Image (cartoon, rainbow, N blue to C red; front, side, top):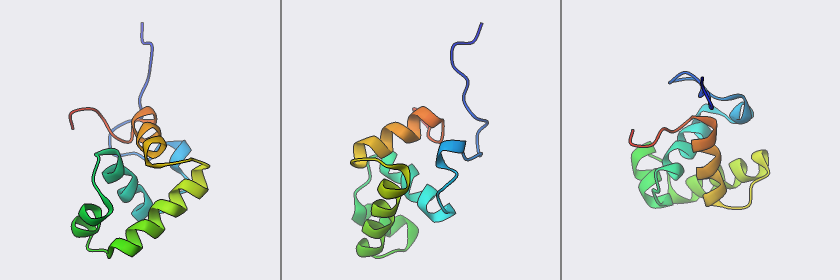
Length: 83
C-alpha cells in the first residue's frame, strides 16, 4: 500500500504549472536554502532579478514567504530530500 505518491522525477507538478521554467529553477534553489545572491550566482542573474522571481512565485502561488515556497517544493515532489 502506498500512502503518498510523488510526481516522476524531472516533471513539474500541477501546483507549479503556473510558473515559468526560470521560476521553477528559482523555487528549487530556494527550497535548498540558497540566498538570493547564491541563486543569482548559480543562474547567472542579478540579485535584484532573483528577488523579482521570488516575488512572482509568491504572488502566483499565493504564498507568504520563502519558507512556504520550500514547503510547496517538497510537498509537490519538485525537490526530494537528500537530492
